[in-house]
Image 1 (cartoon, one colour):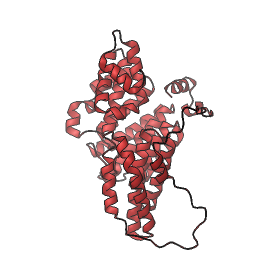
Image 2 (cartoon, one colour):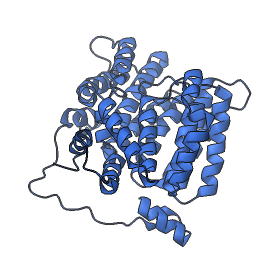
Image 3 (cartoon, one colour):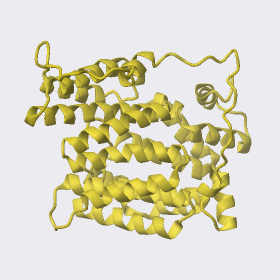
Image 4 (cartoon, one colour):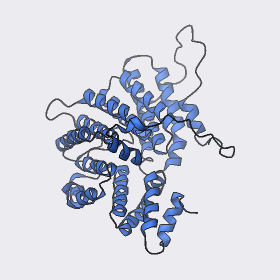
Length: 372
């Protein structure tokens, strides 16, 4: 994608115009479809009933405990930033089934609204997990369901927050125009129209501005990306600190997150020197700011560190890049394993290093699968 973006800049066209409609590669006979997500796929995509019931079915069994469901969802969400993906995968199918049962049991009223909201939380967590590992198609199924439930529950802030995960999926599958469009719609939905509005609303609005910027810069629309980044900065300043906006497993938003994410723009256009300069000079990216404003979400911190590692190797300092990769492999091994940029950065470090690789760096390479 980085190469396509460079070509798009030279041709002065959108990156999305260069994405080919190629047929997928044929699966080899010794690479069967993995079945390790079978239980989650069954829970998330059950067979469709072929005959519609002639009458509405009355609820059966005990009334589902929605408060317990939401508590268990939040407990499971703690596994996501901790990188305990196998444990999360094991917990999610039961949560999906419990959420489906709650929605089926309550036909109307406040109880149904609460059941819909609970299922939106579950499906939103499923979508974030599947996007991370990555299983994009089924992640799309989950987040579409989450948005539909939040919309029926008439919770516009949750609708917009769930749309952020949809933007993640669209970005990672090269659907930049759609990602920007979804982000703009979400911003319109929750725009804070008065000073002193709910911090959740500011946080979601600013988060969606960041996603719009991420889509625009990748799609060779730098001016639009700058406009969206300014909007995100306004929202971050209105909050004044890092803010976690309620949804299980959701990333936070604030001045530090906005500053870290804005570095991606310089990375996309290939200006590694600008990233190094900003990391060294911007107050919002110093350790003092972290102590004063609060810590960004763990995944955002890890991504920032990986971006910094990439810029160091591209500005002639592979030793510092190596330090970051070794540290990330120690503190976030499961997360790092899912990052293509980590493997690319490791290969660049190995190619530019004048001395033999250290044992620690060899261990990182084995973890990433770039050496045996």
